[in-house]
Image 1 (cartoon, rainbow, N blue to C red):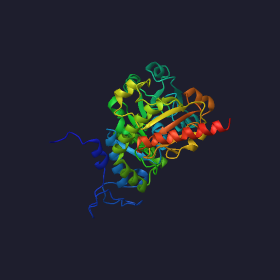
Image 2: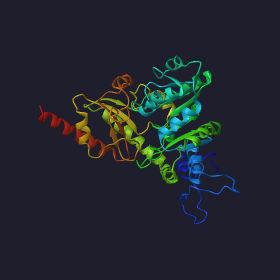
Image 3: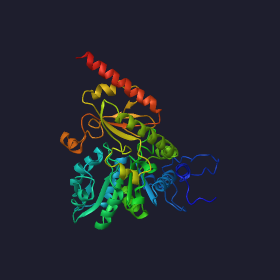
Image 4: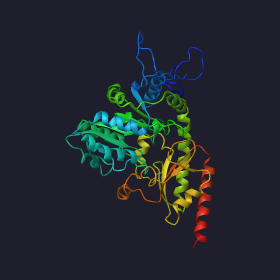
Length: 390
């Protein structure tokens, strides 16, 4: 039986892999050279041009995962974001972004755009009217993030694409939290997909990288800037990332299952005030997520009951690691006000709905019962300690 296209695990494993023609090894060989011949060759290769053999192979894999024609890889997710926005915006242009935004992206726009004379507006919400009311005559790019970090808000991708077409705008999405396993924004009309490849693509908390996928035309425009700014990725990291993506679908699906179970358990716990997870029917955007996502991700956030000291709680965890990043195979937890959104002012965090007691929980591939047991023992320690201090 002939298949029209390979399945997701096959894409993760085989698309873009390099052939070891000399020794017939089963995995992509690693080409560490930073200097290649320029005479009598089809391609003049140079690391800063994003076209070494390993770079090209990885880009093909990422493009295939996002159903796009081409892709580029960078040294970090923020490098992917900054290169993309600066490639399509210039002095006098205007950018529209969501009100709730990853802290690094927010800080980049607020602190750096004034140097380039680029204007921007934050939409007051996620509905069509919220976005449309801040679009101006000089708006060029509409940037979204869904699910959002850290409150897991969902933006209607088809709605955004329709607004962008009406106004002739380029749409850009940070698709990190969903990953290409759970969501392909291109199917809904979004132009450019960005990832912090450090997260689900890397998946083992040992890689820092960024990725952009789009049409060949748009990738070429980003490349024209990127080759001058020089934010390429080392071939060893490229090789590690290509290796890691091979298991991405398996990892992410396992994390999806765990996260849904943990969201339900936390939602019913008397010491948890609120859970933010689009897979819960109680989530205000559940129906939108159900329509445009294949899985609800391994990410969630929750607010502790005010009676629980957040620092004591995290110090009491034994299995779940208080750690800065996310999406690794190990479960991690952090306080956004101290990490991902620490650059925002207290007023800005409150405006976004990020309370002091909010915790962002990245669920790994451990057994769900072990994660439950760890949280329960942490609650017991904290409540016992607080009783002793009263």
